Amino acid sequence: MNIRKCCVLFAALAIAAFAMTTAHAAGTPQKVYKIATVVKESSDPWFIRMEEGVRRFASDTGHQAYQKGPGSTDSAQQIQVLEELVAQDIDALCVIPIDPGACEPVLKKAMEKNIVVITHEATSQQNMDFNIEAFDNVGYGAYMMDELAKAMGGSGKFVTMVSYLTNASHMEWAASAIERAKEKYPNLQLIAEERVETQDNLEVAYERAKELLKKYPDIKGFLGTSSNDAPGAGKAIGEMGLIGKSFSVGTSVTSVAAPYLEDGSTIAVTCWDPAEAGYAMNVLAVTVLDGKRGDIRSGLNLGVKGFENINVNGKLINGQGWIVITKDNMSEYDF
Figure 1: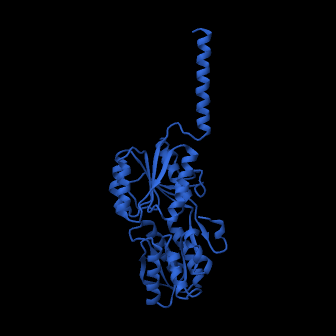
Figure 2: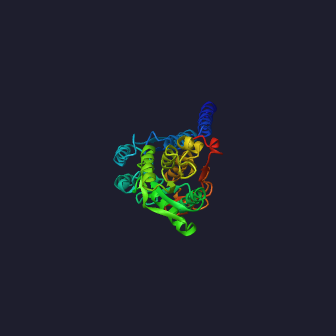
Figure 3: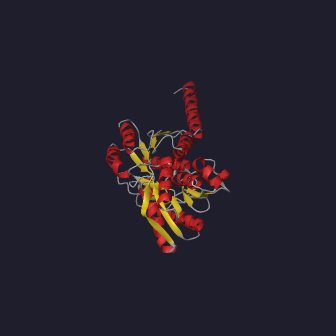
């Protein structure tokens, strides 16, 4: 090979190396994966916030990560979204199931097509590679009960609210809250209804709370598990002039709960940042796709707030990501 050809070859190699370095610096991975995150409802503020995390992941990594969901919290609609995605050329699904049991067939189909499946809020899911939660569900339910018991002064009647009786995480939080009350607060009394379905809808939660307040005029506590439960109960408490006499606590975010935290009808809401959960699911999906499943073990840092030191038990993963939002600190959590 003559000197001119060597120079040309060297220049070509240098350009290629520069292009690879530039691509890496810009966050473009060697292999670009298509990852779809499927949520319960695309217009819910909780999942609007989650989409921020998914988009940030795509921007940071260069992977084709995006979010989809049904127009309402309807299991059949969500399954249709999943079916359409499984039929496409995607590498991974990150799913927050409305009804984990109903999603089993379509997620099994996905896995049979070698699509990686990561779930969230679905500890009972069978057809998945990993399920990741922001925290231990039992501890989270107990913590919510501690907050409600404090507001109630440790005595009185209470009820738990769930989006659907089929929602595994919500049912687990409610069960652990009830167990905490039995163990620690002997003067708390669970009413006969125990778990009231709200369809993850603030107006439904509001109507159910009004019905209960009329049926049980002395009810003092509402513990909500969906993001609309505690604010819905708070709306009923405020409307019926019971602020300071009846209290609501539960999972929610500032964008939903702010008016009720402000007027005192909702005492506190607990949550995790859905944006970080969305980001963490996508990190897990890429880890599996890269053939690094063995790296997913207790102590791993996913590089995501609340997931810096994960606990892994088989296919179930927990972080340490819950937060408490009150009237005093809600300005710190603008989602």
